Length: 305
Image (cartoon, rainbow, N blue to C red; front, top):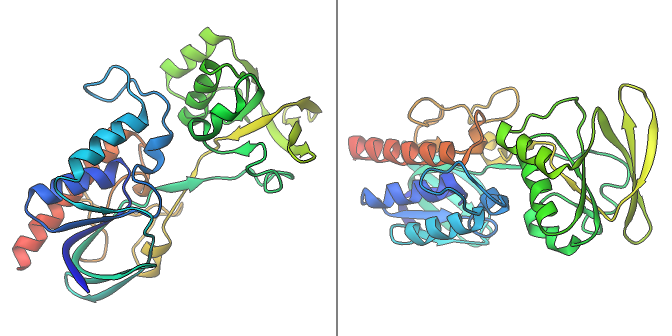
């Protein structure tokens, strides 16, 4: 069983930053990622508020960060953690589908998953017109009619990206105003992208692929069907907290992991950072939390060794 000082679960901005800081402190560090390194960061089409870059894609920033992290930590992609076991104080067993590890501390950077609409047709047409990542799947819809559902940053960033690649875009939002940052709202107005206010998806229709969507106006209670080729859903996220809850890590009423200022959870040796902790879901915040978690783990290991 390989032994580490720190094992970081998840390799988004928080996880990669934690890896850099832990490794630079001389801790033997492993990052385990169930998919490809980057997490939700890979889905950000364009970012204009990350310090030092006036404009950068999520993928490029992840590439830079991953390259830096590899100098200080080992990164195992496509290795999903299945179970954590507390063996003693600062003695934790980490089990993945590939191996078992022993570590003094764990930093949970497991992020979130896409929230679903639970509308008729959503599951049926998943991958056949229903998608959750504009950057990942948007290029399939150049010149096509697309409905983006949601009113936050992810939804509006996705709509703007799809517009730039030549898709015909409309946005449906269940309220009469957006939650997205002002600069994104301003860009949306500049592009003159069509909006369906106070509207929710009542049904997604099609044959082999999506052909139309039925929208319900919550104010008028009127339903209308519109022809579309695809629908991108961005209505929020749910915390990926299963392995944390299995060992008794405390979460808030929404399922986000509760931490103190040092990113420590209620269990000794377990820390958390990034979107899984709730609060302000911003790249720079995730990086900051990852750095704090790694330094807290280092301090605790030094104090108990």
